[in-house]
Length: 508
Ligand code: ARG
Ligand code: ZN
Image (tube, rainbow, N blue to C red):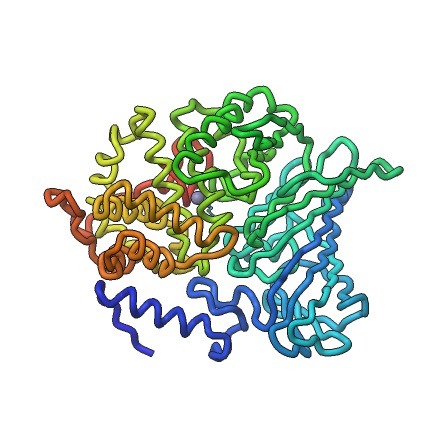
């Protein structure tokens, strides 16, 4: 199949292409079966939907391994004599389907299960997988973050299935309960609310957490460490709880205290915070290889490198806002496919930058306003498209390039300049409202923008999202684009000062 991408035709072609890629009936020549995601074709599985995960993690301090039990409720979409889960690096001991032992085998990054009897369409079935995992295992990619006193999880985008077997694609969100057992002296935490604490007689304690709202597998957080929980109350009584290494609680307090006011600001722009609680999890490692970025928006409990949060407010505030905004864009409204990542990162950066310049904090290049910064980014537009592809057409190698971040923010700025601030705000609210607790694609965003503004924005946004050249910026005919060939580092690739390589929200 040969597809010629021209800017104006790009959106339509991409729609057609993704329809082909998402159709389960297309055989994927020799490749491992998956949901056909444009970025990670073999992620996820067809034939069923996951409804709920009931996970248990038992941390063994002596071996530093984790015994896991995953109870997964699935709803078959057709008769299934066999079904697959994503799984990598899990030593599976037993699989049961509705309580009966089932045959299983692993291949590639899949766990194949053959129930004693085929599953019937529409009839929910319960899969139980017992396994052991080693957070320190060397795998081609991993969602485990080993720490000196335990572990945390960073599954985005394709590694949650190294932590538990699952249908590892954000389009299959589900409800989660997570039980974490740790030896006394350590604390087990996970997304959502603490619902029960059970002290066993043998010096171990199990804490159970429930997420009342759907979650994508990539957003699961489970952590064990020598932690202290700091609870406070945010706007209109929202429970805030930070989980911090006990020895660092005092030095991290100034950063953690920022969340309350940040929530008020974010809610003024985006509407009520979508989840039952919020907080930060600065885990107990700053090792550059523990995870290759600064923060990760694991639902209701954002993972952080602790050293980053010791910096002055103008350096950390915009980044904390970026992660907070992911609660709306990314966690509540999750991408339909990984190629829609700019919807997460572009929005998170857009609001983080708005927040920065509103506060009068110039960036590291001396820009003092959002418009100044956007003019600078506009100048890099062709180079970003050349080096990282169009904003909404990433591949696995350039997925987290700044093109999805500040590149996405530039698209949103262009839209705001085109339709005006009031209409832009209505587009944002309508989009969040329509897709709350679900998924949305780039086409969904374009459709909402067109409907709310009352103008067909398919061509305009198609050029901005899929074009290989930077379109004109509405209202700024004097803005110029530098030649694509000029070499210069991408905007926002690194965080200065050794917080690690920050593919992602780098220099906000
Ligand atoms: N989503 C994270 C952020 O908000 C970045 C994660 C980068 N992930 C990765 N696998 N490189 O900044
Ligand atoms: Zn982000």
